[in-house]
Image 1 (cartoon, rainbow, N blue to C red):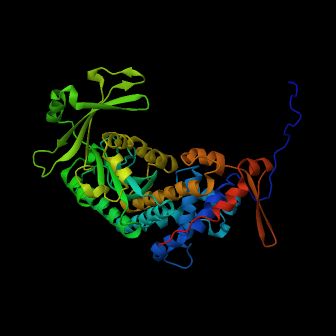
Image 2: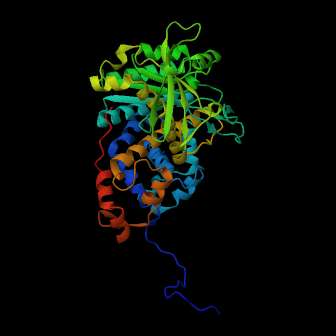
Image 3: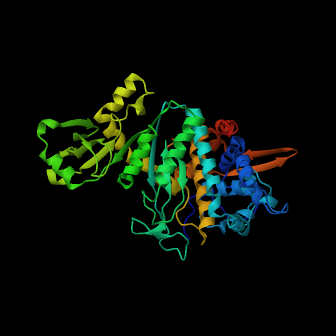
Amino acid sequence: MKSVRSSQRINKIGTTSDTITGRGGIVLFSRYLEMTGILDILESKFGFMRKSAKGLPVWILFKQFFCFLLDGTSRHLVYFDQLQKDKGYAAAIETERSQMASSHTIKRFFKLFGWWLAPHFRWILRKLFIWRLKIMKPTEIEIYIDSMVMDNDDALKRHGVEPTYKKKKGFQPLHIIWNGIIADAIFRGGSKNGNFGNVVANMVTDLVKQIRSEYSESVTIILRCDGGFFDEKNFTTFNDLNIAFIAAGKMYDAVKQQAGDAADCYWNSYDIKEQTWSFLEFGFRCDKWKGFFRAFYTRCLYEDRQMLLDFARPDNVILTNIGINDKVLENCTAERRQYWLTPAAIINSYHQCGTDELCHRGFKDFGFEQLPFKRFGPNSAVYYCMLIAFFLYQTFKEDVTAEIIPITSYATSVRRKIIDIAAKIVKKGHTITLKLSESVRHSLKFDLLWTNCQNPPPILV
Protein backbone atom coordinates (compact mmCIF):
# COMPACT_ATOMS: atom_id res chain seq x y z
CA MET A 1 0.00 0.00 0.00
CA LYS A 2 1.32 3.43 -0.95
CA SER A 3 2.17 5.73 1.90
CA VAL A 4 -0.09 8.73 2.49
CA ARG A 5 1.79 11.95 1.73
CA SER A 6 -0.98 14.48 2.37
CA SER A 7 -2.38 15.13 5.79
CA GLN A 8 -5.48 16.80 4.31
CA ARG A 9 -6.85 13.99 2.20
CA ILE A 10 -10.56 14.02 1.29
CA ASN A 11 -12.20 10.83 2.51
CA LYS A 12 -15.86 11.39 1.65
CA ILE A 13 -18.04 13.15 -0.91
CA GLY A 14 -21.31 14.69 0.16
CA THR A 15 -23.86 17.30 -0.89
CA THR A 16 -24.86 20.66 0.51
CA SER A 17 -28.08 22.61 0.46
CA ASP A 18 -26.17 25.90 0.51
CA THR A 19 -26.59 28.22 -2.47
CA ILE A 20 -23.16 28.18 -4.08
CA THR A 21 -21.88 28.97 -7.55
CA GLY A 22 -18.68 28.77 -9.55
CA ARG A 23 -19.64 31.95 -11.46
CA GLY A 24 -19.61 34.41 -8.59
CA GLY A 25 -18.16 37.20 -10.71
CA ILE A 26 -21.08 37.22 -13.13
CA VAL A 27 -23.08 39.19 -10.56
CA LEU A 28 -20.95 42.20 -11.54
CA PHE A 29 -22.06 41.98 -15.17
CA SER A 30 -25.67 41.28 -14.20
CA ARG A 31 -25.79 44.37 -11.99
CA TYR A 32 -23.98 46.41 -14.66
CA LEU A 33 -26.67 45.54 -17.22
CA GLU A 34 -29.36 46.69 -14.83
CA MET A 35 -27.69 49.95 -13.80
CA THR A 36 -26.81 51.13 -17.33
CA GLY A 37 -30.48 50.97 -18.32
CA ILE A 38 -29.96 48.71 -21.35
CA LEU A 39 -32.63 46.27 -20.13
CA ASP A 40 -35.22 49.06 -20.07
CA ILE A 41 -34.24 50.07 -23.61
CA LEU A 42 -34.59 46.49 -24.85
CA GLU A 43 -37.96 46.19 -23.16
CA SER A 44 -39.18 49.39 -24.80
CA LYS A 45 -38.13 48.22 -28.28
CA PHE A 46 -39.14 44.56 -28.08
CA GLY A 47 -41.66 44.35 -25.23
CA PHE A 48 -44.49 43.91 -27.74
CA MET A 49 -43.15 40.42 -28.49
CA ARG A 50 -44.44 39.09 -25.18
CA LYS A 51 -47.68 37.43 -26.23
CA SER A 52 -48.98 36.47 -22.79
CA ALA A 53 -48.68 37.74 -19.24
CA LYS A 54 -47.86 34.17 -18.25
CA GLY A 55 -44.61 34.29 -20.19
CA LEU A 56 -41.34 35.75 -18.98
CA PRO A 57 -40.75 39.48 -19.52
CA VAL A 58 -38.65 40.24 -22.57
CA TRP A 59 -35.97 42.06 -20.59
CA ILE A 60 -35.38 38.97 -18.44
CA LEU A 61 -34.81 36.84 -21.54
CA PHE A 62 -32.31 39.34 -22.93
CA LYS A 63 -30.54 39.54 -19.58
CA GLN A 64 -30.21 35.76 -19.30
CA PHE A 65 -28.96 35.48 -22.88
CA PHE A 66 -26.34 38.21 -22.32
CA CYS A 67 -25.13 36.47 -19.15
CA PHE A 68 -25.10 33.14 -21.01
CA LEU A 69 -22.75 34.70 -23.58
CA LEU A 70 -20.37 36.11 -20.98
CA ASP A 71 -20.44 32.82 -19.07
CA GLY A 72 -19.18 31.13 -22.25
CA THR A 73 -19.42 27.59 -20.89
CA SER A 74 -21.43 26.43 -23.90
CA ARG A 75 -22.61 27.87 -27.21
CA HIS A 76 -25.56 25.46 -27.38
CA LEU A 77 -28.98 26.73 -26.33
CA VAL A 78 -29.76 23.43 -24.56
CA TYR A 79 -27.34 24.63 -21.86
CA PHE A 80 -30.19 26.84 -20.60
CA ASP A 81 -31.86 23.68 -19.26
CA GLN A 82 -28.85 23.10 -17.02
CA LEU A 83 -28.75 26.72 -15.91
CA GLN A 84 -32.47 26.61 -15.11
CA LYS A 85 -31.80 23.94 -12.47
CA ASP A 86 -28.79 25.73 -10.96
CA LYS A 87 -30.04 27.83 -8.05
CA GLY A 88 -26.53 29.18 -7.46
CA TYR A 89 -26.33 30.57 -11.00
CA ALA A 90 -29.85 32.04 -10.71
CA ALA A 91 -28.84 33.80 -7.50
CA ALA A 92 -25.61 35.05 -9.09
CA ILE A 93 -27.48 36.76 -11.95
CA GLU A 94 -30.06 38.06 -9.45
CA THR A 95 -33.01 36.19 -10.93
CA GLU A 96 -35.79 34.19 -9.26
CA ARG A 97 -35.65 30.46 -9.90
CA SER A 98 -39.18 30.61 -11.31
CA GLN A 99 -38.02 33.16 -13.91
CA MET A 100 -35.08 31.13 -15.24
CA ALA A 101 -35.68 30.33 -18.92
CA SER A 102 -35.45 26.85 -20.39
CA SER A 103 -33.89 26.13 -23.76
CA HIS A 104 -37.38 25.81 -25.27
CA THR A 105 -38.32 29.26 -23.96
CA ILE A 106 -35.19 30.80 -25.49
CA LYS A 107 -35.77 29.04 -28.81
CA ARG A 108 -39.41 30.13 -28.98
CA PHE A 109 -38.37 33.69 -28.18
CA PHE A 110 -35.80 33.96 -30.97
CA LYS A 111 -38.10 32.28 -33.48
CA LEU A 112 -40.43 35.26 -33.13
CA PHE A 113 -37.85 37.51 -34.76
CA GLY A 114 -37.85 38.27 -38.47
CA TRP A 115 -35.29 40.06 -40.61
CA TRP A 116 -37.48 43.20 -40.52
CA LEU A 117 -36.60 43.73 -36.83
CA ALA A 118 -32.89 44.26 -37.61
CA PRO A 119 -33.30 48.09 -37.69
CA HIS A 120 -34.43 48.00 -34.04
CA PHE A 121 -31.21 46.25 -33.02
CA ARG A 122 -29.10 48.61 -35.14
CA TRP A 123 -30.84 51.60 -33.52
CA ILE A 124 -29.80 50.31 -30.09
CA LEU A 125 -26.24 49.62 -31.25
CA ARG A 126 -25.81 53.14 -32.62
CA LYS A 127 -27.29 54.64 -29.44
CA LEU A 128 -24.69 52.72 -27.43
CA PHE A 129 -22.01 54.16 -29.72
CA ILE A 130 -23.22 57.72 -29.13
CA TRP A 131 -23.34 56.96 -25.40
CA ARG A 132 -19.62 56.15 -25.37
CA LEU A 133 -18.75 59.12 -27.55
CA LYS A 134 -20.40 61.46 -25.06
CA ILE A 135 -18.41 59.85 -22.25
CA MET A 136 -15.00 59.86 -23.96
CA LYS A 137 -15.52 63.16 -25.85
CA PRO A 138 -13.04 62.54 -28.71
CA THR A 139 -12.19 65.45 -31.02
CA GLU A 140 -11.31 62.96 -33.77
CA ILE A 141 -13.25 59.78 -34.49
CA GLU A 142 -11.32 57.11 -36.39
CA ILE A 143 -13.62 54.35 -37.64
CA TYR A 144 -12.94 51.24 -39.70
CA ILE A 145 -15.37 49.42 -41.98
CA ASP A 146 -14.92 45.75 -42.82
CA SER A 147 -16.85 42.52 -43.30
CA MET A 148 -16.44 39.50 -41.03
CA VAL A 149 -16.89 35.89 -42.11
CA MET A 150 -18.82 33.67 -39.69
CA ASP A 151 -17.85 30.11 -40.58
CA ASN A 152 -20.94 27.88 -40.77
CA ASP A 153 -19.43 25.47 -43.27
CA ASP A 154 -20.77 22.36 -41.56
CA ALA A 155 -24.27 23.78 -40.98
CA LEU A 156 -27.20 21.96 -42.55
CA LYS A 157 -29.67 24.10 -44.55
CA ARG A 158 -29.05 27.45 -42.90
CA HIS A 159 -30.87 30.27 -44.70
CA GLY A 160 -28.24 32.79 -45.81
CA VAL A 161 -25.27 30.44 -45.39
CA GLU A 162 -23.42 30.96 -48.68
CA PRO A 163 -19.85 30.65 -50.02
CA THR A 164 -17.59 33.46 -48.79
CA TYR A 165 -14.31 34.84 -50.09
CA LYS A 166 -12.52 32.70 -47.49
CA LYS A 167 -13.77 29.56 -49.28
CA LYS A 168 -16.03 28.72 -46.37
CA LYS A 169 -19.82 28.77 -46.29
CA GLY A 170 -21.29 31.12 -43.76
CA PHE A 171 -22.57 34.61 -43.07
CA GLN A 172 -20.65 37.80 -43.85
CA PRO A 173 -21.96 40.74 -41.78
CA LEU A 174 -20.66 44.26 -42.38
CA HIS A 175 -19.20 46.12 -39.40
CA ILE A 176 -18.15 49.67 -38.55
CA ILE A 177 -15.58 49.52 -35.76
CA TRP A 178 -14.51 52.26 -33.36
CA ASN A 179 -12.07 51.94 -30.48
CA GLY A 180 -12.37 48.14 -30.32
CA ILE A 181 -16.18 48.07 -30.39
CA ILE A 182 -18.66 47.51 -33.20
CA ALA A 183 -20.62 50.74 -33.64
CA ASP A 184 -22.96 49.57 -36.40
CA ALA A 185 -23.54 46.34 -38.29
CA ILE A 186 -25.62 44.72 -41.00
CA PHE A 187 -26.21 40.97 -40.92
CA ARG A 188 -25.87 39.49 -44.43
CA GLY A 189 -25.50 36.25 -46.32
CA GLY A 190 -22.04 34.94 -47.07
CA SER A 191 -21.95 35.86 -50.75
CA LYS A 192 -22.37 39.63 -50.13
CA ASN A 193 -19.08 41.41 -50.79
CA GLY A 194 -17.97 44.81 -49.56
CA ASN A 195 -19.41 46.68 -52.55
CA PHE A 196 -22.76 44.91 -52.69
CA GLY A 197 -25.36 47.47 -53.75
CA ASN A 198 -25.25 50.80 -51.92
CA VAL A 199 -25.02 49.24 -48.47
CA VAL A 200 -21.62 50.70 -47.57
CA ALA A 201 -22.47 54.23 -48.71
CA ASN A 202 -25.83 54.20 -46.94
CA MET A 203 -24.42 52.69 -43.76
CA VAL A 204 -21.62 55.25 -43.46
CA THR A 205 -23.94 58.13 -44.36
CA ASP A 206 -26.46 57.20 -41.66
CA LEU A 207 -23.79 56.84 -38.97
CA VAL A 208 -22.01 60.08 -39.88
CA LYS A 209 -25.30 62.00 -39.78
CA GLN A 210 -26.09 60.53 -36.37
CA ILE A 211 -22.64 61.45 -35.03
CA ARG A 212 -23.08 65.03 -36.19
CA SER A 213 -26.64 65.41 -34.98
CA GLU A 214 -26.36 63.66 -31.61
CA TYR A 215 -22.70 64.12 -30.65
CA SER A 216 -20.91 66.99 -32.44
CA GLU A 217 -21.25 68.82 -35.74
CA SER A 218 -17.59 69.80 -35.73
CA VAL A 219 -15.89 66.51 -34.88
CA THR A 220 -13.32 65.26 -37.40
CA ILE A 221 -14.11 61.80 -38.78
CA ILE A 222 -11.49 59.55 -40.40
CA LEU A 223 -12.64 56.34 -42.07
CA ARG A 224 -10.31 53.44 -42.89
CA CYS A 225 -11.11 50.52 -45.19
CA ASP A 226 -9.31 47.79 -47.11
CA GLY A 227 -9.30 46.90 -50.81
CA GLY A 228 -12.69 45.20 -50.59
CA PHE A 229 -14.34 48.62 -50.63
CA PHE A 230 -12.39 50.06 -53.57
CA ASP A 231 -15.15 51.74 -55.56
CA GLU A 232 -15.79 55.24 -56.84
CA LYS A 233 -19.31 55.39 -55.40
CA ASN A 234 -17.94 54.66 -51.91
CA PHE A 235 -15.12 57.19 -52.14
CA THR A 236 -17.41 59.82 -53.64
CA THR A 237 -19.91 59.32 -50.82
CA PHE A 238 -17.19 59.65 -48.18
CA ASN A 239 -15.85 62.77 -49.85
CA ASP A 240 -19.31 64.35 -50.18
CA LEU A 241 -19.88 63.76 -46.46
CA ASN A 242 -16.68 65.74 -45.81
CA ILE A 243 -15.08 62.93 -43.85
CA ALA A 244 -11.50 61.84 -44.42
CA PHE A 245 -10.99 58.36 -45.82
CA ILE A 246 -7.83 56.26 -46.01
CA ALA A 247 -8.35 53.21 -48.20
CA ALA A 248 -6.44 50.46 -49.93
CA GLY A 249 -6.15 50.83 -53.70
CA LYS A 250 -5.77 48.24 -56.43
CA MET A 251 -2.40 47.14 -57.75
CA TYR A 252 -3.11 47.83 -61.41
CA ASP A 253 -0.39 47.41 -64.02
CA ALA A 254 -0.40 51.15 -64.74
CA VAL A 255 0.23 51.86 -61.06
CA LYS A 256 3.10 49.37 -60.96
CA GLN A 257 4.58 50.90 -64.09
CA GLN A 258 4.36 54.41 -62.68
CA ALA A 259 6.12 53.27 -59.51
CA GLY A 260 8.75 51.42 -61.52
CA ASP A 261 9.43 54.40 -63.82
CA ALA A 262 9.69 56.94 -60.98
CA ALA A 263 13.20 58.24 -60.38
CA ASP A 264 14.79 57.68 -56.97
CA CYS A 265 14.53 61.38 -56.16
CA TYR A 266 10.71 61.08 -56.02
CA TRP A 267 10.80 58.32 -53.42
CA ASN A 268 10.79 59.12 -49.71
CA SER A 269 10.95 57.01 -46.58
CA TYR A 270 9.93 56.97 -42.95
CA ASP A 271 10.66 54.64 -40.04
CA ILE A 272 8.14 52.94 -37.78
CA LYS A 273 9.28 50.62 -35.01
CA GLU A 274 11.72 48.19 -36.64
CA GLN A 275 10.61 48.79 -40.23
CA THR A 276 11.41 51.35 -42.87
CA TRP A 277 8.84 52.21 -45.51
CA SER A 278 9.61 53.89 -48.81
CA PHE A 279 6.75 55.62 -50.57
CA LEU A 280 5.93 57.43 -53.77
CA GLU A 281 3.16 60.05 -53.79
CA PHE A 282 1.05 60.70 -56.90
CA GLY A 283 -2.50 61.50 -58.05
CA PHE A 284 -4.77 58.57 -58.88
CA ARG A 285 -8.06 57.87 -60.57
CA CYS A 286 -9.49 55.06 -62.67
CA ASP A 287 -10.31 55.76 -66.32
CA LYS A 288 -13.99 56.61 -65.76
CA TRP A 289 -13.65 58.33 -62.40
CA LYS A 290 -14.56 62.01 -62.29
CA GLY A 291 -11.85 63.18 -59.90
CA PHE A 292 -8.39 62.42 -58.57
CA PHE A 293 -7.43 61.29 -55.10
CA ARG A 294 -4.11 61.44 -53.33
CA ALA A 295 -2.25 58.12 -53.56
CA PHE A 296 0.83 56.53 -52.00
CA TYR A 297 2.70 53.55 -53.36
CA THR A 298 4.44 51.97 -50.35
CA ARG A 299 7.17 49.38 -49.95
CA CYS A 300 8.43 47.80 -46.76
CA LEU A 301 12.25 47.76 -46.74
CA TYR A 302 12.91 46.05 -43.40
CA GLU A 303 11.49 42.99 -41.73
CA ASP A 304 13.00 41.60 -38.54
CA ARG A 305 16.01 43.88 -39.08
CA GLN A 306 16.73 42.40 -42.52
CA MET A 307 16.31 44.38 -45.72
CA LEU A 308 13.91 42.71 -48.15
CA LEU A 309 14.87 42.11 -51.75
CA ASP A 310 12.81 43.87 -54.43
CA PHE A 311 10.78 40.81 -55.39
CA ALA A 312 9.87 40.06 -51.76
CA ARG A 313 8.64 43.50 -50.76
CA PRO A 314 4.92 43.68 -49.88
CA ASP A 315 3.78 46.64 -51.98
CA ASN A 316 0.57 48.55 -51.29
CA VAL A 317 -1.38 51.43 -52.75
CA ILE A 318 -3.14 53.79 -50.35
CA LEU A 319 -5.78 56.32 -51.45
CA THR A 320 -7.07 59.30 -49.48
CA ASN A 321 -8.92 62.57 -49.86
CA ILE A 322 -6.81 64.23 -47.15
CA GLY A 323 -5.09 67.13 -48.88
CA ILE A 324 -7.71 67.08 -51.68
CA ASN A 325 -10.86 68.04 -49.76
CA ASP A 326 -10.01 70.87 -47.35
CA LYS A 327 -13.28 70.50 -45.46
CA VAL A 328 -12.41 67.12 -43.94
CA LEU A 329 -9.84 68.74 -41.60
CA GLU A 330 -11.36 72.19 -41.22
CA ASN A 331 -12.31 71.60 -37.58
CA CYS A 332 -8.90 70.27 -36.53
CA THR A 333 -6.41 72.39 -34.67
CA ALA A 334 -3.61 73.77 -36.82
CA GLU A 335 -1.21 71.27 -35.27
CA ARG A 336 -3.45 68.26 -35.96
CA ARG A 337 -4.20 69.48 -39.48
CA GLN A 338 -0.51 69.69 -40.22
CA TYR A 339 -0.04 66.20 -38.79
CA TRP A 340 -2.77 64.58 -40.91
CA LEU A 341 -1.46 66.18 -44.09
CA THR A 342 1.88 64.40 -43.78
CA PRO A 343 2.37 61.14 -45.72
CA ALA A 344 3.70 59.43 -42.60
CA ALA A 345 0.44 60.06 -40.70
CA ILE A 346 -1.69 58.71 -43.55
CA ILE A 347 0.41 55.60 -44.08
CA ASN A 348 0.66 54.95 -40.35
CA SER A 349 -3.13 55.29 -39.98
CA TYR A 350 -3.67 52.79 -42.79
CA HIS A 351 -1.42 50.34 -40.99
CA GLN A 352 -3.82 50.45 -38.02
CA CYS A 353 -6.31 48.38 -40.04
CA GLY A 354 -4.73 45.23 -38.65
CA THR A 355 -5.31 46.45 -35.11
CA ASP A 356 -8.92 47.32 -35.95
CA GLU A 357 -9.55 43.77 -37.17
CA LEU A 358 -8.63 42.40 -33.74
CA CYS A 359 -12.15 43.46 -32.75
CA HIS A 360 -13.45 40.57 -34.86
CA ARG A 361 -11.20 38.17 -33.02
CA GLY A 362 -12.49 39.50 -29.71
CA PHE A 363 -16.10 39.21 -30.87
CA LYS A 364 -15.66 35.57 -31.89
CA ASP A 365 -13.92 34.79 -28.60
CA PHE A 366 -16.86 36.34 -26.74
CA GLY A 367 -19.63 34.74 -28.79
CA PHE A 368 -19.71 32.07 -31.48
CA GLU A 369 -19.72 31.82 -35.26
CA GLN A 370 -22.08 28.88 -35.78
CA LEU A 371 -25.61 30.18 -35.40
CA PRO A 372 -28.28 27.81 -34.05
CA PHE A 373 -31.37 28.30 -36.23
CA LYS A 374 -32.29 27.37 -39.79
CA ARG A 375 -34.16 30.58 -40.62
CA PHE A 376 -32.41 33.86 -41.30
CA GLY A 377 -34.57 35.97 -38.95
CA PRO A 378 -33.84 34.10 -35.68
CA ASN A 379 -30.14 33.84 -36.56
CA SER A 380 -30.11 37.58 -37.23
CA ALA A 381 -31.56 38.22 -33.76
CA VAL A 382 -28.95 35.97 -32.10
CA TYR A 383 -26.19 37.75 -34.00
CA TYR A 384 -27.40 41.23 -33.00
CA CYS A 385 -27.81 40.11 -29.38
CA MET A 386 -24.20 38.97 -29.44
CA LEU A 387 -23.18 42.38 -30.83
CA ILE A 388 -25.02 44.31 -28.11
CA ALA A 389 -23.74 41.98 -25.38
CA PHE A 390 -20.19 42.29 -26.78
CA PHE A 391 -20.48 46.08 -26.80
CA LEU A 392 -21.59 46.05 -23.15
CA TYR A 393 -18.85 43.57 -22.27
CA GLN A 394 -16.29 46.00 -23.71
CA THR A 395 -17.73 48.94 -21.79
CA PHE A 396 -17.98 46.71 -18.68
CA LYS A 397 -14.21 46.32 -18.81
CA GLU A 398 -13.77 50.08 -19.12
CA ASP A 399 -16.27 51.06 -16.43
CA VAL A 400 -15.85 48.25 -13.89
CA THR A 401 -12.73 46.08 -14.21
CA ALA A 402 -10.15 48.43 -15.78
CA GLU A 403 -8.12 48.61 -12.55
CA ILE A 404 -7.97 44.82 -12.22
CA ILE A 405 -7.55 43.51 -15.77
CA PRO A 406 -6.43 45.26 -18.99
CA ILE A 407 -9.33 46.49 -21.10
CA THR A 408 -7.72 44.79 -24.12
CA SER A 409 -8.20 41.36 -22.50
CA TYR A 410 -10.20 38.81 -24.44
CA ALA A 411 -13.33 37.25 -22.98
CA THR A 412 -11.53 34.01 -22.15
CA SER A 413 -9.17 35.87 -19.81
CA VAL A 414 -11.98 37.86 -18.19
CA ARG A 415 -13.96 34.67 -17.58
CA ARG A 416 -11.04 32.90 -15.92
CA LYS A 417 -9.96 35.85 -13.76
CA ILE A 418 -13.18 37.71 -12.93
CA ILE A 419 -16.23 35.54 -13.66
CA ASP A 420 -15.19 32.01 -12.66
CA ILE A 421 -14.83 32.49 -8.92
CA ALA A 422 -16.49 30.45 -6.19
CA ALA A 423 -19.11 32.23 -4.14
CA LYS A 424 -21.84 31.48 -1.63
CA ILE A 425 -25.12 33.40 -1.67
CA VAL A 426 -26.76 33.68 1.74
CA LYS A 427 -30.28 35.05 2.29
CA LYS A 428 -30.96 36.20 5.82
CA GLY A 429 -33.92 38.36 6.69
CA HIS A 430 -34.27 40.92 3.93
CA THR A 431 -30.58 40.83 2.99
CA ILE A 432 -28.86 38.72 0.32
CA THR A 433 -25.08 38.46 0.77
CA LEU A 434 -22.51 37.24 -1.73
CA LYS A 435 -19.69 35.60 0.22
CA LEU A 436 -16.22 35.10 -1.24
CA SER A 437 -12.99 33.73 0.11
CA GLU A 438 -10.77 36.31 1.77
CA SER A 439 -8.00 35.84 -0.80
CA VAL A 440 -10.31 36.34 -3.80
CA ARG A 441 -11.99 39.36 -2.27
CA HIS A 442 -8.67 41.12 -1.71
CA SER A 443 -6.76 39.98 -4.81
CA LEU A 444 -9.58 41.06 -7.15
CA LYS A 445 -10.43 44.17 -5.11
CA PHE A 446 -13.99 42.91 -5.26
CA ASP A 447 -15.33 45.72 -3.10
CA LEU A 448 -14.11 48.20 -5.72
CA LEU A 449 -15.64 46.13 -8.56
CA TRP A 450 -18.93 45.99 -6.67
CA THR A 451 -18.96 49.76 -6.29
CA ASN A 452 -18.05 50.31 -9.94
CA CYS A 453 -20.74 48.03 -11.36
CA GLN A 454 -23.44 49.93 -9.46
CA ASN A 455 -22.38 53.36 -10.70
CA PRO A 456 -21.85 53.16 -14.47
CA PRO A 457 -22.79 56.12 -16.66
CA PRO A 458 -26.43 55.53 -17.70
CA ILE A 459 -27.42 55.08 -21.32
CA LEU A 460 -29.52 58.07 -22.37
CA VAL A 461 -31.70 57.78 -25.48
